[in-house]
Image (cartoon, rainbow, N blue to C red; front, side, top):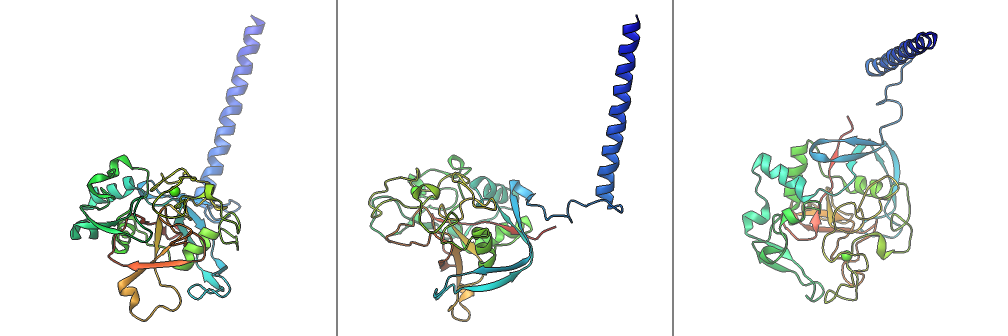
Length: 308
Ligand SMILES: [Ca+2]
């Protein structure tokens, strides 16, 4: 009997302590939310490293500050210091599933769909050869003979133009990254040619492996696009900044002629199609540019939003 009383007292004491702990935890949370004196707001102490946004996007916060971009002697991307306000950039390239949600919600029709075709390259074609394939658009990026978007839900959306990418970003309340924003986030504090160093490592990004486009040796495991986040992220947690798909950016490289921004859009990071012997832009320095309304099977996007 005595033991039963003692046990019940122990239980009561534990209950009292639990209630006290819970109350303390609630008051700390309230203080944090309400910004009471002495409380540290989680939004204003350290910038949040990650933000969960709309449509399944996760963003990495880049703090405001001055950053070095470009490379010494690079005509289109000279070495310089840029000062940026804080922004949040998607950790991953936008997927087919995410683009499908946008189309479902808005009825958006892409440039490739309006035109009735998109540019496609496949294994066995000569280097630099691309074909305008009828019926190729984001739902069927390689046309009727390739996989459809719902077989590639976690792959980056392709066959979207720079204009289509901007429309997707606007729907999210975001925008495309500027060229310096893309590069600062892709570098993640590194001054090297690749996020992992100065020597290319075929296992760390999805590019074209092999001497020519006649044959891909698939050393990285993928012939065309790979599901996003298939390779290790950079030091700040961004995936696929090198390879997989070219990522649209606003602004044009140094040397662009006035007015060209109306006709052209820039792209960074290279893609699954890029090989050492063709477009070797799968690095942190080179800047591609293409027709603003052009649509290819190796072009995609990464979204930026302002920091709340
Ligand atoms: Ca590959």
